[in-house]
Length: 291
Image (cartoon, rainbow, N blue to C red; front, side):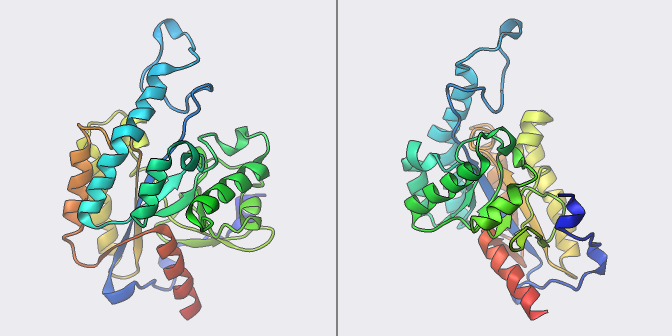
């Protein structure tokens, strides 16, 4: 299905203003990607290559890089967010609930949102049976939390031509794969609409640190530059700032201070809300119904 069959083009300057409660201008969506990497398969990302171009399986150093995030980095990110009273959206591989129940329980106890992120860290086009994988991911999260996830972010933001339709059929209400706007928008499926809730590949530590190899301070600098412009624009019509991080990247000792600096700045600004994605979804649906 071509994108134009999913949604109509919409210039942000042509839309009716979106208003937030109490005159707020910007919603900050904090997404912590909590992933489960299969030790016996090709590792999703690499911090280092093996000598002489050898493709090693098992890939010990790169798997252990991720494991550090689960053992240490996640807890740094959580402590920072707890300190500022911010509840995140956990974009979580459902198998984390089975293989890392300590982390899944901490997310549940903290009142974070569970957003579906596949069963394990494997892109949808590479999954053998996409419908079965999506169903398994949703049911695993529901069994652990008592509630099915309302949202979905595909591993690597990857989809097949059928992904959106399957997600809608399985009860998903919003998706984040389509990084195309500073406001939510509605997308069509073969059954019912889903809402695109803004995500980011720009304010994302994978892009900034792992792909572009910037210094740690760039996460703070880029986030604040983005915020200042959205804050100005949000006076007329609300904007969403999505900050997307990974425990094995932003949760390391030499980067965590930059993550903390962001929230030290933003929590002291008036007119800023810190919502989970399902809160953004409910606000957007209510705003559309009231328009």
